[in-house]
Image 1: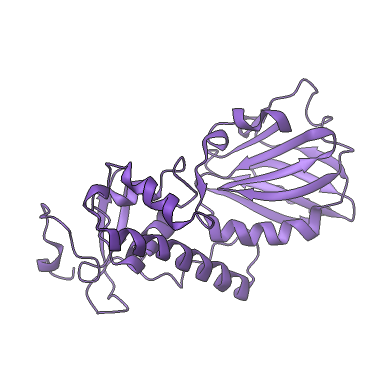
Image 2: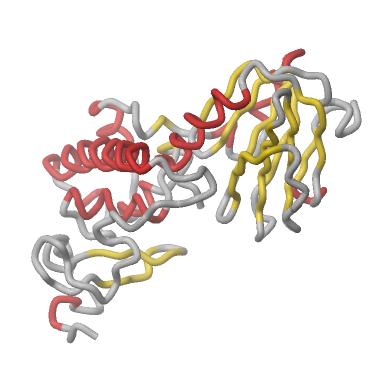
Length: 282
């Protein structure tokens, strides 16, 4: 999925291309992705509206239009954004939404797995959109004391906490692994077992990892449909040596997903069924 650093880059590219432009044409190739929460029919409800602002909110991209109308996109696992010339007639099969605007540009939201959703809703009803109305504190903005208070209330494993979008908006699989590696915390550590120093390190790591990733992606300036992951330290590197200590990076099941971690840099806080440090590299 596009994660927070990816979406910051997408937001930075969408604003100059779309804000202030009038929508000339709207269409979808997959009505199952579209959720229209207004009485007016799609696409007529969007045509002629001007895009007033674009804002990332957690993992959502929010497009504010004239008339207090809003488009909210939740890209989920496979959603991607494209900016293409309106004359480009090569339409992808999984087209969730296309918006042609003044100046010859078209925004396309494409979702090969059809898991993401595009909501067309009045601004006053944004809180009714699943997940959007229950987003937690922005991961880039939460202060240390509010973060400490959040951790105190948790009884689950720390990686599950990081990925709970009702707690923090919004951290996905890749950056949960990177944050825990930077903080030196094993992904299966339960929140009540975190020491005060570890909680503070975790808070610092969230800001450091996400901002460093934002800067790196901005430096490379990839097309907005491209996810840049090759600079990550542990995610996607299972079976390879840790860049810090040389220990083999491992992959372990945590909750409903797989976590990548270094057994040496992120020692287990409790005895686990598998002693990762004693396993052979492969």
